[in-house]
Image (cartoon, rainbow over all chains, first blue to last red; front, side, top):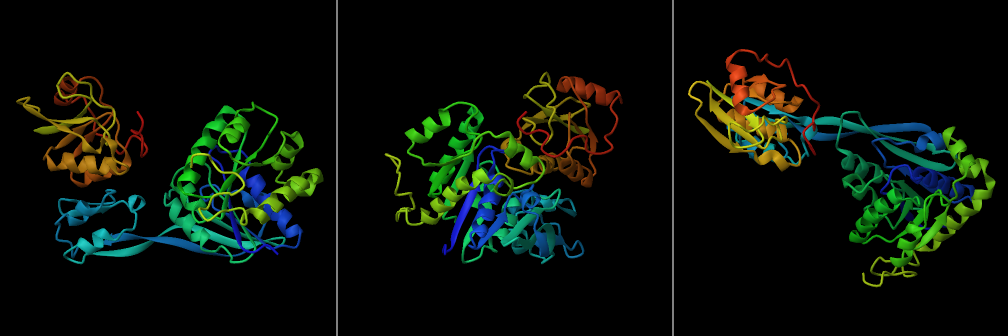
Length: 301
Length: 122
């Protein structure tokens, strides 16, 4: 049995196939009778549920603390506004305005208030839902519309990672704070890209990010037969493993468009996920004590 | 009466800056004597909350009205909480804006006229 392993499936560019690979890997793994958990951390627009069709059995609301000002007690000193680096609270004449969506919940305003006029109150930012998709343990976070505390919600989703089996994290696209939060602490990051100039540009950015975070990683190229060979050349020069290549198969797109899983309807691709699964099984042994993949190393790390 | 105008430069011939929160400068001017001073806007490169911190700077100058191109909801809320009158959609030079204001041709904004983050990367 696979001992606990956390894989983050990420990509700089959106629409490269993160969710496709993450959901199919989860399904393939449980198909072998091995435990797998799928955690959709693309909380701004989670879509793994469209393919896995989980039965959600419970959920919880995620809140952050934001300030609530008692204007009866407020002496209008303005210290709350001076300490806030995000202009989330500001003292205008004898009035104190709060902007909850700008608050980072540091608690500074409450500490500096000499009149003890500021208390914290919870702001609902999103929901986490739990369920089963076949044998897959399914978890996803859903940020509520108008909220911006994406990394905090992702952190909360990741608290539900199980200690045994394979945990697959579906990472949001890009290279910003939510991505950093989602890949943080993963044993291994699979970077999904496509062989186009856009794919290459965003892959480079993501490679910079995972190298800076000292995370072991490898690349999967989706729609392999479109575009050009530049992504492969780049991986070759940079000594990056390309561990999966999925072709530009119209049937995959058709299955995707109606929410079907590749491993269900296109059996010939099971071998690709089998190889990916085998790779993930061996990945921990291939990571050296500097958290690099021992198989390949950049010449000048 | 003292008013504030968002400006792309430091003179009365400068163009009105179409952004409030991330305006380059605030020209603080007495519309009768035309005496003015210029404040460089430190919130131009703020990570967030630029409209609010800019509004605070403008409020602290003691002006009674703000003339600008566009103003988002957070800045609008802050300015109106302080009782300032807000005029959006203002274009041309700073001097022309003052003339328009004096002639009563500007109408007060009923609310923010753009979404948050309007002025980023412009």
